[in-house]
Length: 261
Image (tube, rainbow, N blue to C red; front, top):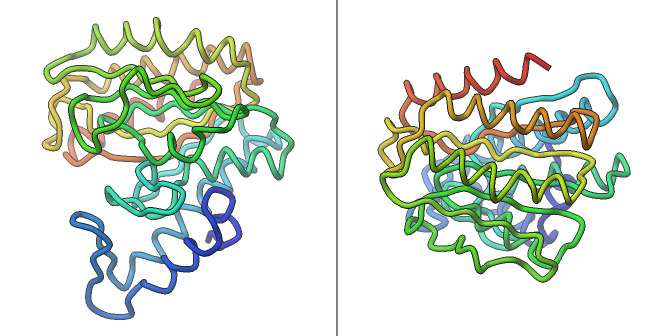
């Protein structure tokens, strides 16, 4: 189980407390139009935080080479002080910060292939030269951020948007041309994957046409890079994915690739 102190690695304490305080004991509480809490939500949120932190601990201490935390709700839309897009605390950001604080990592990279741009991760690390955020996503689409011109104060934000209808070839091209070289140059001590699978062609919330094989391919590419740059260290956290068949196939491809390390 996560703790408020863990969540405070990426969010101000006042915001962390506010989310805990608004969690209902019965009924439903709407945070915004599509972000709602039920009596079980806060426990699920904190288990997601704890899962991300535990994964970092296992990887950074060398017990495992990589780890996947299959927790919901997702986190990459959660900004420093704003819950939105089904997200309350930003698990990927917490993972990166925990690696730095608890394990001495100097640099971390977050790679986000969710079909929606991770505005929360971008917001948290906009002015931080020690964490690079890289994203492929559909544009235009919720939440409206993620243009290539959004580069951060230290040129450590890398956005490679795709157009509705784009599929495997353009995804792989964007990954190889825009993202992998930037990660290699950055030289991270840990790669965190915001592993959303709603860019799958079956998913109802967007219009990209990826297959599970694309996620397996991207996983292998990151593993190859991680072997060269950070002793293979990868932590992956589940983000979006709303068609159960597409999600299950994609997660299987991703985890199968990770298990090949």
